[in-house]
Image (tube, rainbow, N blue to C red):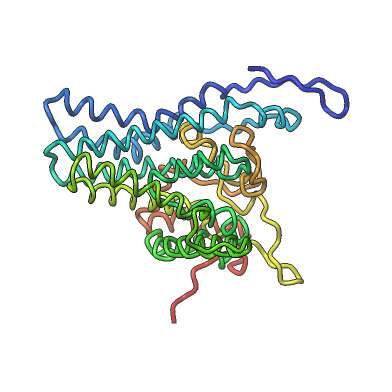
Length: 380
């Protein structure tokens, strides 16, 4: 589709979004792993095919990123308003919700009805849980909008994994404190992803509840109330889980809990890599500078960006939170990750390797000044 607008100078600007139909490729993230179950039954029940979701997310996608490479193209600023109003892009985000739910329900059904070795169940929990953690990203995209329809679909998306406090803490906490030591979702140089998880998971939970409690009390409402946005999601998640248990038996409950944990942990891993070591500086008034594109790690890897709705153009997102995914820009002077998110998640899983690759990048970003780095404080 060609966008045609007239700019303030009276000149006509034309732009063809070459990625318009490629965004449908984001549906491949939840749909391709479903083929594992077809191969499983077609092979007479070989459990080795059930490792495919794990291998797909952590190995195939990074490999494709390395082969296909990056994309640095940006839409002209003059056409961004028109692109932002185009509901085609929004509908793609909506379509991802039933696709991820289908993957989750199919996986729970297979676990509940088939005799599968423990290692295969574990790989399904990690692989499918991590993939469905990407649905939190859809909630992230929709949750930054203010209309009731998008807010509804955002809460439906995060109900799959039960991460009900995400949007509350993300919008009212993380975006305010990002790239500062006070932000539980901004990792520090020298901090492993595992140490970060022990800080971020409870920090996000309690931070979300603190923010929602303040909002409800400002409206003279009790915390336990049907308008509590966190409880709305928790309730939906519980109904889904109890329905599956009633259908397939208690045998599926441990898997559901494991799936939800790895979805949560998947988001934690993403948070870990997005602002690792980056620090906003304080001005003479003691307040942190405004968040700029340079305060988030960026990645232009084409494949994983299409799968994640441009989440990896995180630099522009934090500088301009209301800009929709199709219009997020690349910048020449922002810190850049060595791979797309799936590849970086695998790298972060081995802390010494992550530190070896990323710490020099952080120090280069800071001009060699450790005081300009959000660094892990030495324990005394």
